[in-house]
Every structure is written in structure tokens, then in C-alpha cells.
Length: 98
Length: 185
Image (cartoon, rainbow over all chains, first blue to last red; front, side, top):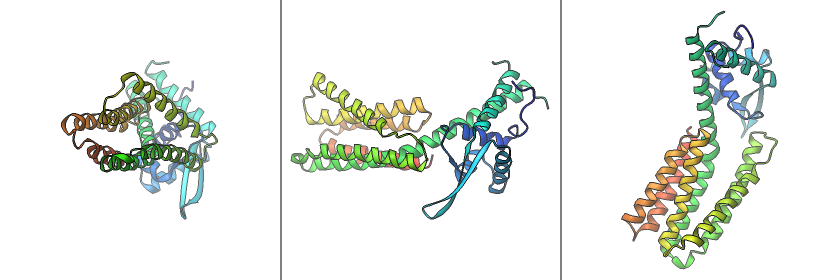
């Protein structure tokens, strides 16, 4: 278990982004629009947080066209999944759960 | 950076809330097209059976069409999500198990009239949806399943003469509205 919370995940919006992506089956992607609703972030804010997580290698962003409309989707990487699990274990350690 | 147990608990609650919301939303959007398609099948089947009982054989065609449609939908959804696995067999398996169960139930219970046969199918579908709602965090399926059970029972006892029309409007229409509701999840 880590001794400090991962500063990249330990931020309310990024925590919600990671939690939402973690709830999906491993290979599934979540659309930017739905991620915005689920995280409660504004569009610009969400973009900035997604970039931070992508640069850290925690999420992978895919851009394509769907029904002639641009679509941005994201999914957790293996490293992101592991980092999130470590973060949850850290929190559980603090409240005395193992 | 240090966290108090209270702050850690708040973060854990936030995680759980977001995970549940995501799972419910995902489930709702996945199930919506199936509900709409089966709603249309129910509405046509019951309306045709009520208006022209000699055409009740049409149910077999509608059900086979629904099963094929469900498999196609699952394949389209798998492709859209870029999943590697093929989930079509789950639908074949689910409908197969349901068909075997209903055949066994019919042979044991031996319903006396067409109204009873017509009521048993939606009751089984209702409990099926309720259980999906309870076990998959797709909570909207629970009230939908209970509504199907409640409305079927109401129609069977209170409106026996109009039962098939009732099932066409309320059963079929209810599933279609349920599907549209799921799309907003």
C-alpha cells in the first residue's frame, strides 16, 4: 500500500473520472459527454483533467467519427487501474479496513 | 499530504456513488433498445391476438424475430464498444433457458384458458427484469419489472374481457416507455 494518496487521483473531478472508468468492463470506453455528466465537470475543466490523467498514462483517449460526428472516448489503462486500486487500498487503510 | 479517516470515508463514498451511477447508466443505455423492440413485439402480438384470435400463431414468428433481433443488437453493441468477445450466445442461452422454463411450467400448471397463458409470460418477464435490476445495479429495471407484474395482475383480474388489449397497450406500451426511460439513464 502507498503511504501518500496519489496526487493525480486525489482530486474530486479526477477521482470521479477514474471511478466512472473503473466501473466499466476492462476494454469498454466511455464517451466524453457521459463522462462530463457523471463527473459533474464543465467541458473545459473535464478536458484539462483528462489530459493530466492521459499524460500520466492512467487513461487512454480515442478520437474518431461516429455517425459523421466527432466522438471522444476514454478508458482506463492497466497502469491506471492499478493506481486506482492502490488509491482505494490507501483510503481503506486509513479507515481501518484491509 | 495526510488524510483523516472522515476524509477517506468521504472519498470512498464518492467512489462508490460514481461507480454505481456509471453502472446504472451503462446498463440502462444497453438495455433500452431491447425493451423498445420487445415492447413493439408485445403490442403487435397481443393486439393481433385480441382482434383476430385465429392469427395467434403469429406469436411464434414474433418471438423468433425478437430473439434474432436481440442477437443482432448484442452484436452491434459489442462492435460499437469494441469488445473482443461475442455476447450473442448469452442471449441465446437466456432465451433458451426462459423457453425451457416456460415449457416446463406450462406442462405442470396446465393453464385452463388463453388468458392464463397470456398472463404467465409477462409475469415471468417481470420477475426476470426485477432480478436483473437487483443484481446488476441497473435499478430502473426493478420498478419496470414490478410494474409489468402489477399491471398484468391488475388487467387479468379487473379487466378480463379486455385483457389482451390491456396487455397490448400497457404491456407493450409500458416496455416501450421503459426503454425510452432507460435511454435517459
